[in-house]
Image 1 (cartoon, rainbow, N blue to C red):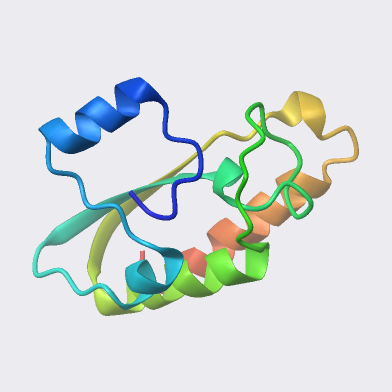
Image 2: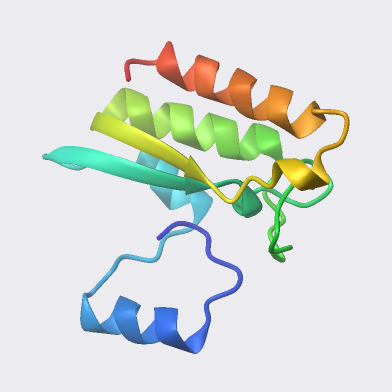
Length: 114
């Protein structure tokens, strides 16, 4: 789990029970794993001002640029076999600005080797 800002009690129990790593965005970007990796990315991990089309407003201070840089660095250093994207609410994106941002991010990440 990278840079979590809103861990609810149920998540906290699962983190402890399954010994899940909790990392800062900086540590994530330099992490090197020696196995295939599946990444699940939540758009609400980006600060609300940069990506407001989410249901849950987190306390994240990570800018879109910071998150993109960290993801690209991680992808370049690891055997990422798949990535999924979650927590995008198109109902909160009437002008499709966040949709365009999401597609652009996915395209840039795809060119990094996915």
